[in-house]
Length: 83
Length: 159
Image (tube, rainbow over all chains, first blue to last red; front, side, top):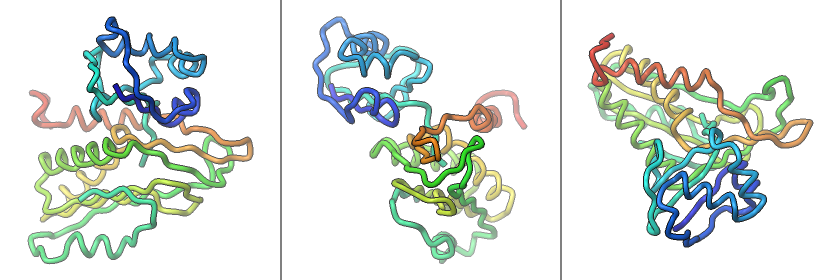
């Protein structure tokens, strides 16, 4: 599973992207975020407030708690501020 | 047509190209967003725009397609810059072309309103107190949501 981080999430995690193989009990967005929090203090800090984290799966916004799989491209980022 | 680029754009050339060769076009509306030198009471020396390559283009294409679905457009254009920009620099150009002005004006506003809340760009400002990430504004969410409610395909609440 490929995970991308953008903006201040990228800075807090300290990585632009990582290739991970989550354990089997990680099957959806909520369990993925919970598992990621345990990877480092930076991850925990970046993901501590889920209201500030937007999730994209394969370059589309994830609404609710959809399933995630090993082939998915996941991106985690704050609310967007372009324009 | 949508484009993400670091270099500046030539507004006149872009608008001429948009309308060229199509005599069905009676009006072009455009919006240009610039970097300001002030934000939330602090001076801004520059800002850096980050984006999610791939998803950005996909979302801009979807937003443009939605505008073409809602209004009788002959052409549309979104050009968005990324990288470091100083005050006065243009960030974004949105333009729409239609037979009549109402469709052009409305769809132009729609494009910039939706872009602001749906396209994955992030701004980091350089101020006297250091760097800071721009926070999303509730007013921008409200402006985008307003268009969701106005969608004639969305339900019985027709405008």
